[in-house]
Image 1 (cartoon, rainbow, N blue to C red):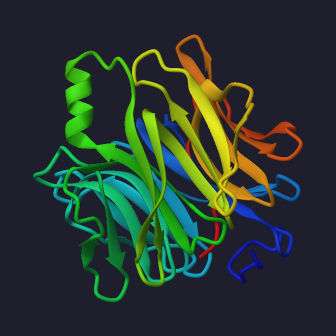
Image 2: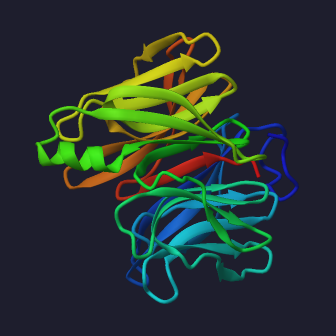
Image 3: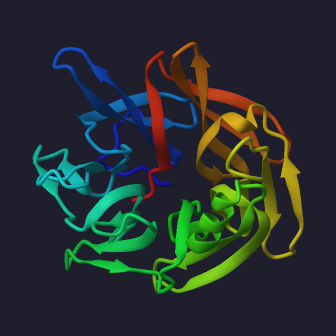
Length: 312
């Protein structure tokens, strides 16, 4: 991305910047907080933008360089479920943006609004994709199929496309009742954010898709064969030619989230467990050479809960 004027001067021009959510306890006031940390992938330098309270079921943050604003999830002002908030780094003001959700699994910032995978209040069964419009301040359910459960999500390298992966909620529940012997049919859909057209780009049988990301015509996704006692495989697929192969990633079973794919390098998060404590790594692998490296590591008892490329 071209460097935005709101980004720190320490970041090099035309860098790929990653916005990370790093959570930890705050012993001064006996609470938890999320630090929003930016990382320059050219030299792995970092800068902490700000911190927000960690009060949501699953803490998500994203720094928008265009708006100089942090968007994040937190417990709603009325105490019922989690909602999306904004923190303006110029004015230092916080605002609750949504009022419809119970739980939020994914948060992506686009030019015109927020793409959110969430569960609505009063419906704790199915995770669906929604769009929050910055101008109208309204949300729209982007999927007509009420049975489709969004299991994971990602985006392409310039955030013009959002990917969702999931399956039938009814089929999943039926398999669970039988003891989860095998996986089920999973699908990946692609949303074009200019038109909101939704296109199915992959069907995978006997699995669950845990992670997905894309760069141009290259799709990378990671599956488990079942929920309990799973084995994991990461695939790279050329959507033009249809060719596909597995990628050998060290500690594949420890991957939490994909950050994204840029210049044929896959960025992802792993977790290290030391006794009852843990730490997180931000890693990358060159999908052509297989070279792997850790580019950022948290202290013990801190976690990278999610991370994305800064594109808006």
